[in-house]
Length: 489
Ligand SMILES: *Cc1c(COP(=O)(O)O)cnc(C)c1O
Image 1 (cartoon, protein in one colour):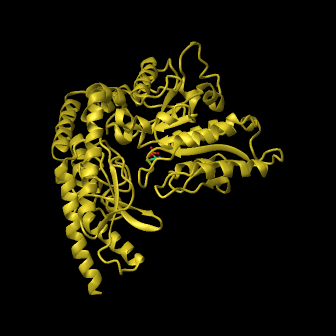
Image 2: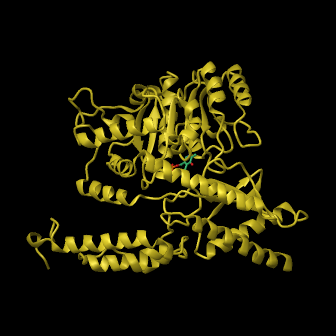
Image 3: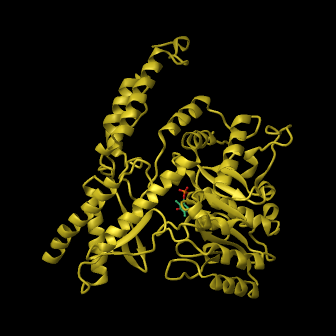
């Protein structure tokens, strides 16, 4: 039995040094040779739970034993988001230098809830978000704040939109109020689901989330939005917020933000622009048009953890009226009373009190790559996606399923026009499973006009043309094999 006085070392010692060196070597090796892992984990449900004891160890264990188990037990259950042939959902990657930033942030373990609880964490957030704002071509009138995810940024924007209605909801709540009209949120079937979740959490109710129709390019019809808002007003409901997406999750379509802005401005409705994935493309002069019409939106979300080589999690919300955001959330407790003027206490601008030092990894990434390096990487992804689309277009039996302006391509295999559409759906799902089962690539699917389509998203900074070509080869090969078993039945 050890006594409290000979507790384990609590300052880094030789053992820590060796452990860190082992981890560093492992990370270097991982980045160098990620392709050796199956992209999609082959774990079966419960594998890891069964492999680990039901109780925490009573006595501490040496690091080497923990790390051995990490390699032996945890790694097989990892789906490799940082793999150059991860093409599912939105492909992402953590620039190696951001791993160092995360290690430093953990070592400092600061909580940036108030300016004084770490002035540099707050001010680095101010500075990096101002850099990013200029890179995106957004006006200086926008103030930025870092949250974990776009989901929380979107929720926060909705909360601010509700506060902007001056209905005294902050004080009186919504329940049991005969004076309160139904509050309405407008989106399309392609808007990311977090907006509807936010509406649920804020007491707006799913019935008051209005789906505006889209055109054949999956973009919102602004006239239909105008009609919906006017009809709601006429019926005594209160329009609260319209959401326009720059780069939707299914196809990367972009809503006509300028026309939507004209509709919402005329009617005094909050405009939230969800540019979680598509926003970063606006750092390219040739894609400035994506965010240009969002210049006088009320709020915009951009996710550096999606397409700016910063590891999960780091999402940015820009708002035109930070004072309103503060009014939405700030409460002062005696413990947290502050005395400094002219500083940001970021706990006042959202739900959470405690805040990680997330800006550090964004700062490392922006300095390491520079604007040009970021632009080069995004351009490469877009070019690879366009090249893949040209291969698909040229191949008999395959077709492109949606416009592909950015780094995502949606497509479908339909070898015989006589096949029932539901059979084609099943065929495409079977091809996707077969391709993913090889472990060489991981891609996902979506539904457009009710039909299954396959989807390849390019976003890892180490993805090469050979990686994309390998995915395309596998798709064609597995399509033939899977279709043969289909027709044999
Ligand atoms: C990925 C995505 C989100 C959600 O992002 P999180 O940061 O994971 O919450 C929201 N909107 C769009 C358009 C997205 O592509």
